[in-house]
Length: 486
Image 1 (cartoon, helix red, strand yellow):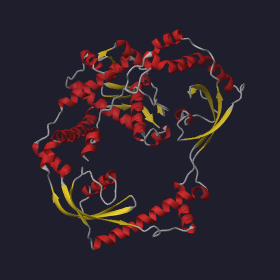
Image 2: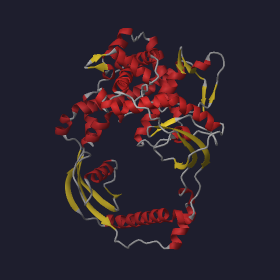
Image 3: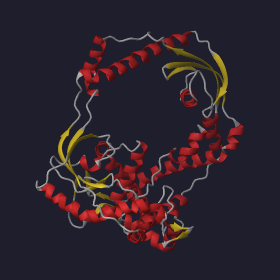
């Protein structure tokens, strides 16, 4: 538990401020209904005397999309983002931020030009050998299609918000620290016993599987698929000498970096430089082929069916394309490819033969869970087990044949429940337990982690204050929203 808290402490409470600057873009796809009257085309909302620009909204959307996409392992689609109402989440976040900024203006807080310069000077992304590099700064912004003025305005907002947070910074009291420490570090002395099923204790025949599938057809759907016609553009065979490559590299060198952000030398980037220069030279002919393909003057040279979990093709563009739409040339595997979306098949219930394996697995898992529940409940009636001594939320050890991670999941269950006896089903077995004794505060651990506990107390108090402050500010400043959403 302590390790988890150290790694994820910034997510233990809801943070109100999310940067609207996005260096890598999901891009904003699909604007929904938008009011373009008067001067509103440049803004999505007006909060108090401040406006929220279209660019701020797009950048914030990209930031939020990337955040959730990373949480989902890169599998978030635009369709899923729409279903979760991501645009509304972004709009609400920006509105709350702007309410706070209005209040900061009212009480006289300022973000000066010197504040912005100081932030820029201390941003590692813009440094070379630890020193701010102006050329690198402009090059990176240009590569990400960000106007320096917009970026610096975003920094002003972030700096102003940081000053406001500092203005309201709340110091935790000794009693609050003790209260949190008790919650984090209480210890239970447990008696446990593992209950499992025999190999053939639960079975399901064909009739039961089919009946289960009939009842749950909507859970077994085909994947959404896209039939594509592709025009693969052959790579030109132009050979470049080292002088030409190095000249191109010098123009674009800030785009050639390692994962840690360190710039590559020409020798390290040479193979990539050759590909990128070729692609640059091939772009004109690719656009000509695009126009010819779109007019039907050139036939496709490949057909392909892809699904929503495909990682090679640009699903963000394909998913929103209309039937028979031809997409502009894009680079796939270092070559230009032109895509025509011929057909889109939406998910539909699978036939029984296709769904049988998954339905059989799900049915058996449900039957096993029910059987385990019954055995665990029976075990509780006259419970005896092994005394494993005192454990806490952060105990790291294996019990009952479980891995350390699964054992930690069990301990978390015990401390999240108030019952003296209970059970938790993990990895196909039920771990039945009884709390024999309890210690409310481990003073040694509390001292060891006092800094982290204080930080979390402060975050909880700060979050509560921010939420209440925003509710109050929403009544004090007029909010006009022009973006109407999906």
